[in-house]
Length: 112
Length: 116
Image 1 (tube, each protein chain N blue to C red):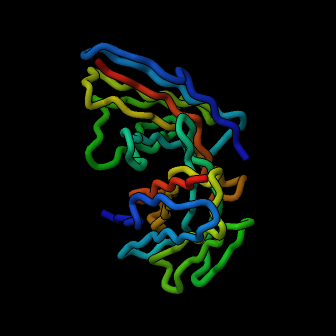
Image 2: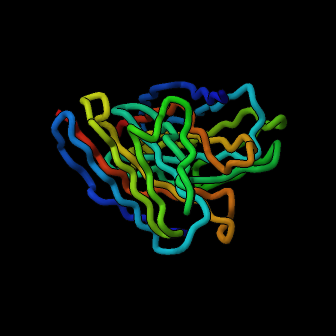
């Protein structure tokens, strides 16, 4: 069974601070996604990474895929209260079934 | 992208009853999935809904408890049978499609179920 561990589990920071969320597995991903979920809504896709070592930027968010494709990180610069939410990584382990397995989640709260 | 709607958006049910959740997509999609999200938790995959054949269930989930139908490429239902309070969760439908970017997955807004 593939597991995706995220750290930290909870994070409460002040507006303007930087933070990094990690997603780790012992298995290799064929692709990995990051989502943000707000209360009462389904997860919203932020980014998909497919190449080892890949870095993608989305405004103040920087996503990195590990060289071995077993881990990923999400870095937020100058966090804002609007960044508050549940951040989820999800990996496709190339099982041929096209299903994504979700990480344990990181709940972020940015205080004004 | 695909636009996904779910019905009902929420429900409160009595123990021992069953609830059927509907998922409708605005376009034909290759793959549909059902997830469960327990309060404060991440998402757990229940099953892959296969058109015209039995759903493929993940470990810990069985057809008798979570029967799934997928009569066509735009619609699926998930039934939560003989409910208990432990079934209180958000149930989410999601899709992937080979005609879209295959690695992208889209989610419906979820159905919030409370079992008393």
